[in-house]
Image (tube, rainbow, N blue to C red; front, side, top):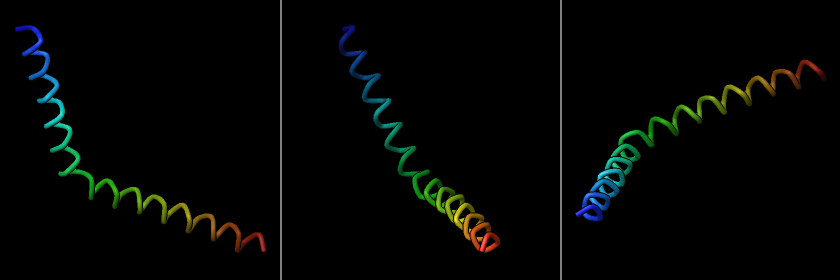
Length: 51
């Protein structure tokens, strides 16, 4: 009985993680892309000022 409950908990965690990934993967990627673009723009601006 203990093993069955443990297996059910693990399956629930797996399903929850899968659903969270499907729901939030695109917004997270967009946010990371925005942050990367801002950083690259700052670096380019600093390099231009140095030259």
